[in-house]
Length: 365
Image (cartoon, rainbow, N blue to C red; front, side, top):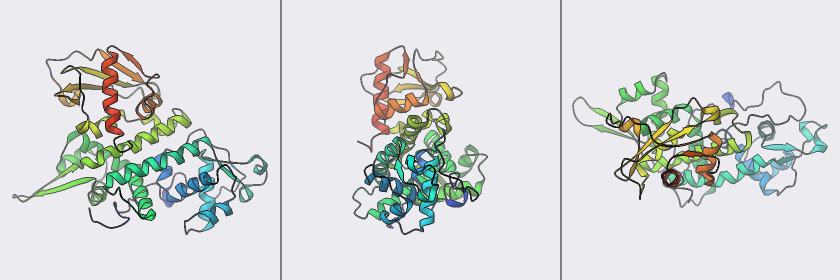
């Protein structure tokens, strides 16, 4: 990775940028102060935008005092047009992050006074955790320039908000080092041009290693950089926030428990557990279509059984832990396990969950 201040990643072309932003304010939207919707955009989408982060931080610093768009613009360190601040305020209001004071409901947006909702307060608390994860993943833990820290957060979270980036990272985490043809096949139907543009971003940012062997013909191998694996905690925190403030609505339905496990498997250590002990993790409820994740202890490490199939052991795991996406995110983030249902060896289930939490949250501790 080139040592350029503010550029751990090249700019990732994502849907969260203004032209294609699904949260962008429609030009025809000229009504009064809108009410929050039931479905809240995920935290990765909201925090990928620096203006959103700055507005949330500005309102948090006001400590309960309602601010107008002009107040936010005056207090914000961003050198942007007031119209962008107004647009983002409306965006965050529709997402349930901000609310207008009751006296403003009949005055329209231009005179609204804004406060953070509980969802906004939680989002503000997540930002320093996400910044810590992002800076440690880049290897830049001793940052002295706040503007560089903002760049690290923005570009890392923007990358994770991109579905093609997540697809590439998941494939490399699951299958190990891959050549171009193997990676292309696993990432279908993503177009080749899109795939290699995202790969170039990940290689430049240091998230993916690209090695070329000098044999004839030359061969290129892509592998996931171990330092970046705990960055998956950003997606976990986003799922936790989503579940906490909008139940099972929206992206939490696609909670990728197996993907989180794959990202940190190499760093998981389990002790005091019998060799070949196995268990299943099941995402239930609105994500019930997800297949159970079967785990097995091999040489003190955790393995996903599908990648370690043994025809001599066809018996399904006797220990099974299940829960909704909200229950899993609460267990992994807050260590609140009461909403998970475990059948079988509770000690085994607790030991494995503890080991997984330690690996995923390595950069938070």
